[in-house]
Image (cartoon, rainbow, N blue to C red; front, top):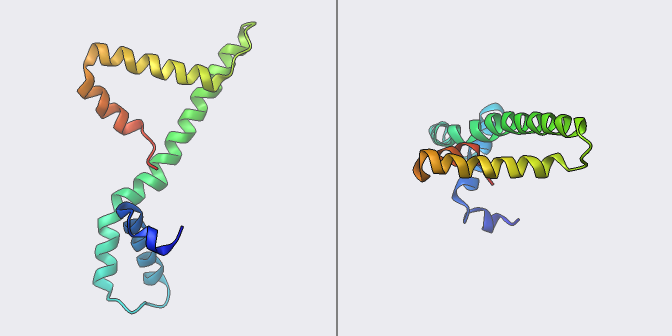
Length: 117
């Protein structure tokens, strides 16, 4: 990835700016002012929390769910991958919720469980 392509992705550019700001606050300051650094950190704080706290916690919870599904599958005589079973259960669950709750509420749920790229 070149620096030129970095500026086409606005969220990534903001995260990189925040990271540079954190480094500049703890190390030798760069040529820009501290108010810009603090503003950049304040602007990207929610994305940083989601990327560095919520995503790892969600990943651990997903792995625990897959471990549970694998444990249940091992109790039977069926040989089936837990990841595929988990994906099918999630798909069926989302379809069922959409039928019960409606598309709008399920889209909100999908936004919560969706992993940012």
